[in-house]
Image (cartoon, rainbow, N blue to C red; front, side, top):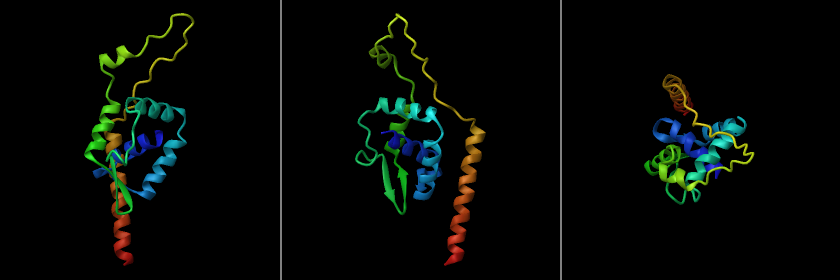
Length: 138
């Protein structure tokens, strides 16, 4: 399940929501080795949609050597990342008062807009360079 959430998050970060398999694998390896924070975050996200299956539910489609997130996939990802509504919070039982040492919930990580923009621009430049190299090679 964490794999599927990671795929959705990576694809949503790419322009047009499409990534070739090389890029997808590289980004997944980076996130998988980034520490406990990412694993815990994906667990929290998948808890909002426990029956998540990105392919059978039509959230991601396979096209021309890569994967692309669909509009339905973006909607599900937005739902998972949205703050829980009062009705959902009320369903969670309150922690016991007796020596409870539960950690406080960690808010979702947010990147500054300019940092995300620079990353998108870098990815786009790399993609354009790959396309030029392929065109020159043929």
